[in-house]
Image (cartoon, rainbow, N blue to C red; front, top):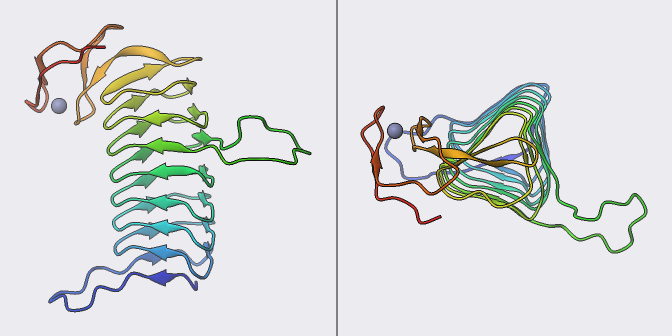
Length: 200
Ligand SMILES: [Zn+2]
């Protein structure tokens, strides 16, 4: 375990240090925030940055140059390749898949990384696939097994292959409305959050 830990000098109470399981590989010059837990057989490459309070489940791979925010949970068997950006409080379910190449060829000479953005609070369901070049908006939910081929709006719920709108979800994760149209003005019955509505 040679990765660098974030230092927070001058704090009255020291933050809980990161936990890295003995079977994990954390390369030098990677950064892992306080309170983050790195479980069995995780591989964090040099140059990766992981925020505080995250959980990386068994067999997660984090590529060089990837930046992961705070409070992110990544379940077992997920590879976060270069070009995938993960904001705070994102949830990635087990065996979800990301890509970073639009024209994959084993012998491609001019390969370019195509970026993917997971915005704050978004959830990616188990075994879902998110193609590259896509933005999943804040607090959106991608259902288990979905194949996401277009951008997902904030709070949108998508499912299927190719993923289509099923409705809208609250920040708390509950379904606000099951409609393929826009979200009207509504209040979440679970947490009381209110929404002014969406035009799309
Ligand atoms: Zn709610």
